[in-house]
Length: 373
Ligand code: PMP
Image 1: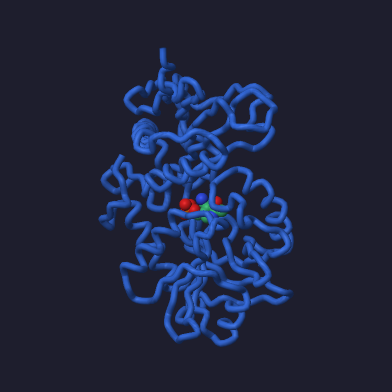
Image 2: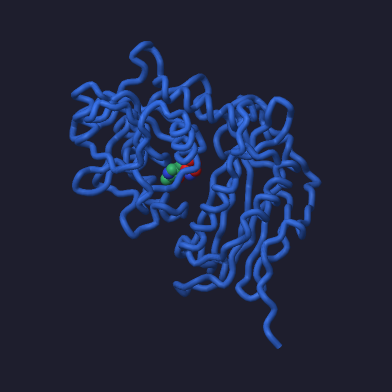
């Protein structure tokens, strides 16, 4: 007889076990990113032979894993970062969850871990955020950060594809990245340590990309810079800012206003925020929008010629993070914020993008990007 086909991930099979010890969320102004967690979690296991097991929502708690599991030795792990928002009417919303599900599948495939039906995981996550409703702060800018994660759980020290995996989702209530308005950051341009390289995994959201960045980040902090501007190649191409995509708004050499971000050449994480900013600004049609390589020489030249208008990082945690300075080749290059307002911590385009995306996330600006749970 033919072996049974491995089972697909199925939201219809979801089993929910509620906690008997519900916790009380911290007051929203006491939240620290990623430190407190909601009452429950999603867990589903995969086995090469049998496929995806019954998805479960269980009380938040410890995992029990064999110390020989692949994840502990070779870092076979990938993850996502997304948020659930509560709008003024109390409706729970996700922002472009299909993008996070697709990226998690791509990251898992890169690590020879299993793929799953994206719609099914989105359905499970919708049920989860509804169950965790009390953990979603309603104040604007506040949200429930979701961390879908896949780990390789075959108990084996062989370096090979894992015959078992676990997918889990935990949730942490979070406040806005900038609590009292924007704070622009100073960057240390880094070309000695690399975040990503051609043929590497820079375009996947795998844990292995992040561990080696922590020590350089500590060094940058010691020198007084908040984030690293990750450069690449003999021409010092700009790639990403910390764990954010990088945007430059300038007047280009042709005299046109242009918003530029590096192209998805395999070394850049395809950010959901990045894609949203490109989509919005192309729709506005008010200036040129380009995905192309940018070098530090171009930035220095634009700065000298007073053509540099604004720079910002972009990601789920902050939406946009304005940049005020870059330390490069022993010099501090000043990046303009808002020339019309000397005390402003963000430029007009940076602010407008932030307000638009925030409005969509909280359902105040109608958009198919905002998905009601
Ligand atoms: N680059 C890196 C390296 C990241 O970790 C993130 C955060 N996921 C981003 C960019 C921004 O991606 P997103 O807009 O999807 O949060």
